[in-house]
Length: 482
Image 1 (cartoon, rainbow, N blue to C red):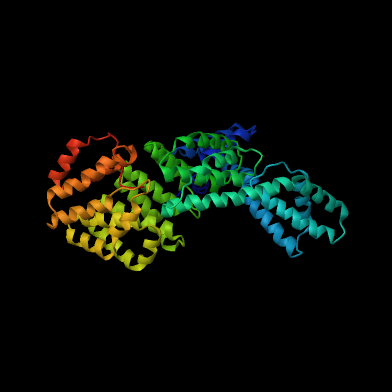
Image 2 (cartoon, rainbow, N blue to C red):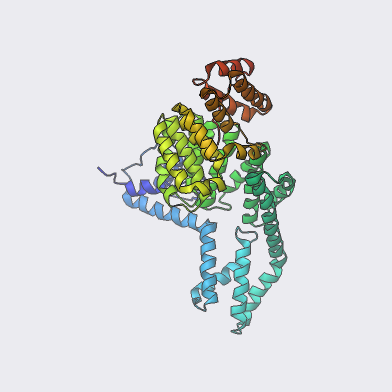
């Protein structure tokens, strides 16, 4: 039987903890019943595995009115809704179709403007276009109001534009380091930090600066400097500052990444489930990250369920970097659930359809999953064939300088060569021992390599046992990649 409050329950299941915290902070209900319901909503928003039903004794209209109140209050502070409003007004100004009541609302927004807002530069440009609209119609009083606003904030507008352009220059170095390992990005940390903490800057530039700082952290596998920034932003979101559901979902996904790097996997999973509570453009990326962390917790079936739920999004996404990353982890999940033949078949089919794109975007992570499915089936001959046909060893040499590099493909290939009697046991041991020695000073990579050793133990027990005697466990095991 359908719950009488199913529609209300479905709505509240999409609400996020920062949204409900803000709503509680601004409510002034005289009705104890409405407050009780809102408190229950807040409680449920924080629970990812447990739901407390709503009280059916309350009048159903109370729930309907509260739903409307929540939507109105969140929309009033939603920076994305504000951006849509500005864009629609700009379109109407440029096509001479703006209505009198819309002009009244715009003039009031200019008159009451308090700096900074999230999309400040967009608002400034809207005001510029509106000034043209007013002057040619000889509406001098309204023109003077808008002109005064533009004069007052022009230097801040120009500053925001300059910072945005400089952010692009920083991004070129950051992404180039990630994609090609041919640049450095540490030199941007101090400037990006200053941008992030500058409370006189627009919210967009500040949040873009944080995203780039997170990227740098992953480039260098250094994350300590990010924690205080997340805590600072957390406080802003709880107050409704810079709010939109899109930004909150992105923030939760970034918290997943941060906690996973500190091996705080329960926290990472918590934020991961929050990040997929509502679907948006980046849902597929968020689901992939959550699936990866669930694998770290040895929750293979749960990880596969998350990936299956997101699978339809993979079929339609135009983001090839995200698509290939998702497929790699989907294959990984199949492997972890013992479905090695299914993983091999899927990988082979996807490679035939997207070979060019795989090598352009994420070949290493894809082939790590593909070869793993073959290793588990003891299909060593096909491992060597796939490596040879795709010239993976040549590509691997160029890949080894990356901060997150692991010898996954090299070890799979070496094990296959040994099992096919192309190399001896001592040579295999020497290759693997050399990498373990190198990785010993990198705790994160060392623990990942240690798990890879355990994965290979059934195939080369004598070699792995010798390595385990020499290289002790860290006590913290992590998967081959995230």
